[in-house]
Image (tube, rainbow, N blue to C red; front, side, top):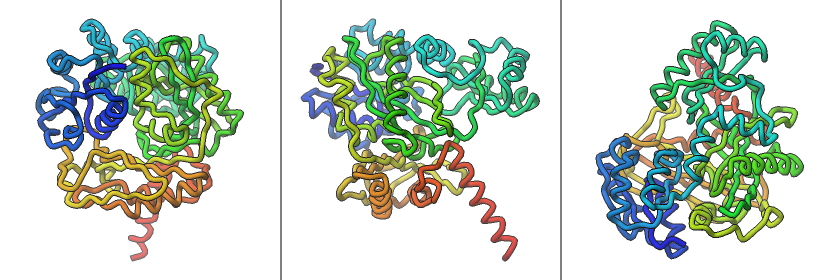
Length: 459
């Protein structure tokens, strides 16, 4: 096991990594920006190093600063968490050239899986179902028209280097394909420096189901069941749960086997996630591989009892998995609500600023991963997540009720948050029945807006 590691991230995931390291007896060095100088997790690290001003480009994305901090602190490894440099193949290669372990897959694996067109080709070779679409990258707009007419509208235009919903557009006819192609390409060039595009058949009203994988450097790979991430807005996840209310044990086995198959094709080790679309007829299609830990890894930890962050460290250090696929057992049901500093009534406008009052929920079955506290100032530079609230109970119904109780207890005053929205979603008949899909939240808001317009007319 490593003796000393650098945590190249911030917020709740930095705190989560530090906690895992302390339990393993590993010393931690936490880097931070000037905006995070009062972060709570800095008090839990063994050493802290400031790496630059608030904006991420000048701190958490500044590879020379992070490598310099790692060399000064004399660490064995760098743990990237999620976001920032977690899926940056160049950063992983720099770590390797500096003889510092990167806690994640090899740079070559990250580069291949990070390019969605190449990842799709790899899925095909591994026998994993993919959505019908272009055979490789689109040459130009006319090529996009050719593919769309061949597979039929609607279609999804996707950036090969995309992520987080950027560089994606739905087209239902030729005019929307023409405009969407150029908009998505421009967005991708600005966000990722790569304007290469491909095209897929758009699956109407699917569920978003992902499989957690874990592999060691000896070639052992297991899957840890699925997470349902269908409650999302603009491709950003809002609520996650495990197991999925729509996945049977037989379907779980089939999806898990396909996830492991593409991981083997990629020579994957460490923690990762294979994402699928699941249609109404239980047909599933490969979307992408996230070659890192996910925000929502916590629901998998709750239902399996497996500490994914510790196993990231252990496999990166060369330890083999000490369990096999048959040892993995899903126990109970876990739900995660992302608590963000955003105003849902104003199109999820970020709401940074000082937290004047912070009262955390607790009780049986509740877990809160949060770096926030009363008096903490949420910076304007980063993701707006305040924390992740989880409920784990024997059944889905019990987990929902426990989560509602915890949301009622959770008090955050100062910034606007998504707590009220989470309560409303959890009590919606469509969610309670487990019949929701990726279009659920958009339909919900359209219905709410129509209700408001109707009330205004009546008054």
